[in-house]
Image 1 (tube, rainbow, N blue to C red):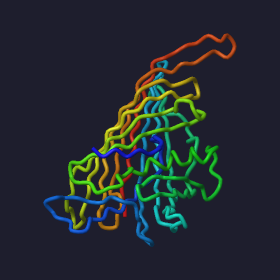
Image 2 (image 1 turned 90 degrees about the vertical axis):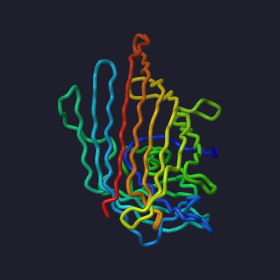
Image 3 (image 1 turned 180 degrees about the vertical axis):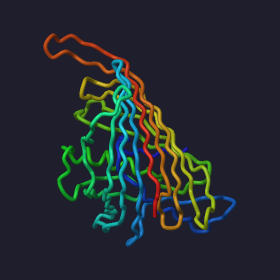
Image 4 (image 1 turned 45 degrees about the horizontal axis):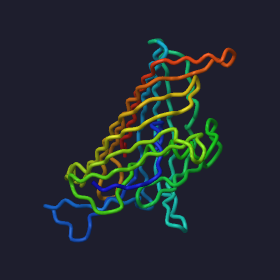
Length: 284
């Protein structure tokens, strides 16, 4: 297994398309099925994706289901002087709904993306080093929050050649509100594996799967979530042109929410289970 040590954040919130350039290494031999995976979206290429997210919460005897969908146009805006790819994500046709206790309620997403554009600055390993909005987006207070949202669209890559069946590990570290020297709010890892390379409908496709394990100690609206998470990632990438055909993510979180009454100071806790699903698929 190849181990890649990087600081990346988790965050299965909506937004973000992986755009990967997977180029065959010189002297590629079919029987070896070895590729070098690196980021390089072709200039002038415009990709349109349909993305959706479903999030289910069960805590304190209450169950909430939130559905969120959006169309996303992805294109290369340029390359910076230090070699980062500036990738534009433009959002349209946003729709959201919420069920509470099985009943449909009026719902507005806390972050409205329709009509907005976000820029991700990505290095060769497909790491989002920073993100910025083209205009003000209500709901985001820091650049880190914006970057964590965009990272859902990127699958981190090894910095060396990889063969079919080979794995690489990416560390997950999300500091959140934690200060330097303190434990991060989210930490863990994802083990990725190149499952196969195949030809389909005239396209060479690389299939990548990943398994994620995380520990969470994160302040939430009604207390601190202390939990463990297990997740899966399935991605299909077109070799020629380097774009994502489809990506699916699933995360199951189980633990407890610990809160404190602001008047009495009495502490309480409740079992909490969260399941998140994220999908994006190339439309054209």
